[in-house]
Length: 588
Image 1: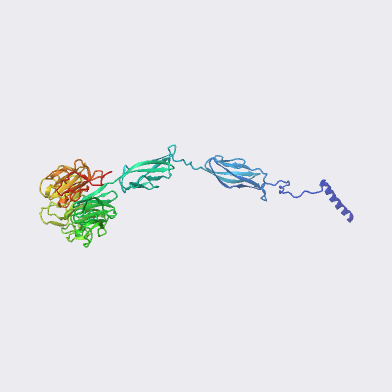
Image 2 (image 1 turned 45 degrees about the vertical axis):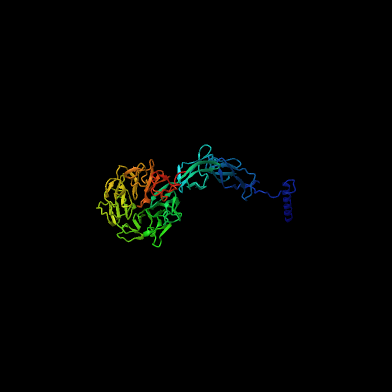
């Protein structure tokens, strides 16, 4: 039995070999896993896509790649991958995986093979608009003129070839003459420097446009003192001319009793002022920061300096650290209204011109008592007046000639008031005080005067009065300036009319004996403001005015100390009734 079994096993092996065919060598193992259930082709287990997130612009293409892999992560390179888009209105994909952006939005792209699939997100973005080049550039509307030291923001408009406005384009600015006006190269901020005409050019992407810009100098805050005058040019620069004297009242460093300069000189110190005021031998200015500065004589401490300072030709800041909104110069006192509308005075107070209830003088500004706030203030010879916001007038100090306008009996003596006293009569918008005489203007422009009638300064027939009396002639005035021997005003029509004494032609025409009623001064001259000299000496018999457009300054009258500013001087008795132009203070 044992032998038979062994033979049977051998025969079985041979038979198996015979069934295998005629080849003597069996095949090796497969490179692919056999599919379940038999066969030699591997199944797709997963599909991988690259990239999984893609961005494409509308109208542009981007490539996606997908590969099939088996369960062992082997790449099945021979397998077919099909592509599809979840939103063909947003993006399409072809058989090779090339995606084309159609409309702005997000879409899923699917790659599938033998039942396996994977998604990629494609973001379709709107392309940035094409950057059109600048075809034209234009400089926008501008002011006809700009004052020196003022600024102007220049603007441009850039357009493309189809006239569409382009924004955000860089513009380069240039000025043809930096001595007339400068301009910031990138911001286009124009700054006037000096009178003249300048060409301003704007350039963007090679395209340019140019405009002409006129720079002017205007003059304001005209004031006259003893044989000298001052005003403020554009930019707050104070110019003075005439007698400098021992005190330096025009700001010149050349001092002496007979020293004068017949052309304007710039007051030193590089200050910028909003107002200048003078009466006698002292001049004060209100700086842009509200501080008062004075130069010239410091008699009685009128410069706001202690008694050890006799005079100064360089502006000195007034003691007390008060910020003012306006100033007024009197005979020996200075006054001002603070930013809180309180009145202060300093200098000589012998006649109560401080209104503080005392007669003690002080170089430090003293508050005017009375509990009244003022909107404007004026100072005369040893007295002061002011107007409230409600157009109520008050005066204090010397009142021997009725210059307070309070309706009281005139003493013609050493009468004075240490406190503010109300005026009688009409409501005034402004007052102007001088030597024992005051004038005021009402809202409609009617002029009234009161006080001394010497030389016909009241503008009407009659003697001195303490009750405001209407100026004859029925004129309506914008402003008035009371001088020592004459009065001038600018009407609503910008005409200059004067009255009073006329020894040197200060009325602006040749009337030997002057006039007690207003007469037209300077022929056809039209003015914005006028100033009649104040001190009651012969040298104060002159007048100055700013033209209606404030581009030209004129003066007429006495000129023995160059107070007309025309570059010349004449004898003390010469009549100069024709307005002459102050040197350098006119358009080119």
